[in-house]
Amino acid sequence: MAAQGFLLIATFILLLMILARPLGTALATMINDMPLPGLARIERGLWQAAGIRSQEMNWLQYLVAILLFNALGLAALFALLMFQGSLPLNPQHLPGLSWDLALNTAVSFVSNTNWQAYAGEATMSSLSQMAGLAVQNFLSAATGIAVIFALTRAYARQKVTALGNAWVDLTRITLWVLLPISLLIALFFIQQGVPQSLSPNQEFTSLEGVRQLLPLGPVASQEAIKMLGTNGGGFFNANSAHPFENPTALTNLVQMLAIFLIPAALCFAFGEAVGDRRQGRAILWAMTLIFIVCVAVVMWAETRGNLHLLSLGADSSSNMEGKESRFGILASSLFAVVTTAASCGAVNAMHDSFTALGGMVPMWLMQIGEVVFGGVGSGLYGMLLFVMLAVFIAGLMIGRTPEYLGKKIDVREMKMIALAILVTPTLVLLGTALAMLTEAGRAGMFNPGPHGFSEVLYAVTSAANNNGSAFGGLSAATPFWNLLLAFCMLVGRFAVIIPVMAIAGSLVTKKIQPAGSGTLATHDALFIGLLIGTVLLVGALTFIPALALGPLAEHFSLL
Image (cartoon, rainbow, N blue to C red):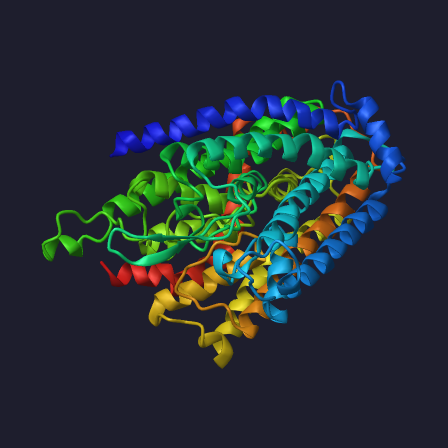
């Protein structure tokens, strides 16, 4: 089993790096504000037709454009969900959503979280799925990538204020990156058996003679961008455990690769754009090392399972509960770590059925800020916050002014870094406390004791860090949970973007200082270790007490 796990991890990482490297080169071209080869004339026509003025923006203009763009998307999606019962492409005649569920869902998809307090096949019309949820899957992903484009330019440029044009970036990212790759993935999914249809649900008679409905819809097209954009919201309630979303072991592998493809490619793009590929590789190494350790722990925990089962006569203690037999323990464990290391949230197994330690690792990966690969764009700009924090700590230890890529890290930047890093821990801890202290919050708990607490902690963690996965034992389809999690999702997304853009606006005006003999190297093994230590230290100090009350207490109670 250990050899199989090693081979699976090694194959996955090798394929990922092979695919991410060329995409990183294309993304670096966009960061440098140049059209891809052969597209310059098409872009000029698009800008003219859309009324886009291509002059660049300062950080505040760029931020306002991003916030306005997402606010309009939120309003449009909320209205669509509220009134879907009166709109076309609703073959099952599904009614509109309640206002609190519509708000929760709209915030969820606009913030790239895709938390779902509903069953997709029984709640959403084809129009809502295609024109609402799938569209926001593209636009929320483009938003995250646009923000990291701006932050990368802040390091690549000097003594200017311009960070690019938000409208140009959003359009390029959507048309030349997300759409083409999603189309290829969707065609592959269709070939593998994923439905793509506007037909109503089909009635059939099962082998037991029971008449049932077979849910259909435009699944493949939404499944592709759901993974590529690290969105995670499933067309069906079972998400990627459903055979219509993820029918084979091959689609399972492609889905995992799609989740990590853009986050890994952005690391390569960052190195190329700032003129030092070693910088991007160092960040990628740090992410990969944390990822490998986390996968190994989950695989070990799930294959070991609960040893008490052996004394009860079971053939094996391995934990297959909540997992699909077509994937098995190892592939399910790898998928769980991939989807929570990135801010995806899609699941091919029920995380609530994992062992205590097997479920704690995905939760912890979210709690450290989704920076191990992370969401498209958001993972890298989140990790760059830790990079700057690590540089600051190292500067304090050696008595030098901290600087990264020739840009000094001053008081203004450190204030913004601290603010951005503290947003999600504050939301998680206060949100969990509120849920546990109120009757409305506790009413959603189906399990007592440490596991019940873990379900609440996981839900708020997932929302605040824009992941979207859940422990299924929590009933979150209530006004209290819809509003609490909507607030966490909205603040967790945009209260981080705002200080990140402020940091970009400050850095882009600074002169790039040449490296000297005392400059801290930020591309070697020592710095990679320092960066990993910084991430682990912040995560441990913040969340170990909460984890001790939940998964750790559950684990030790089973020894």
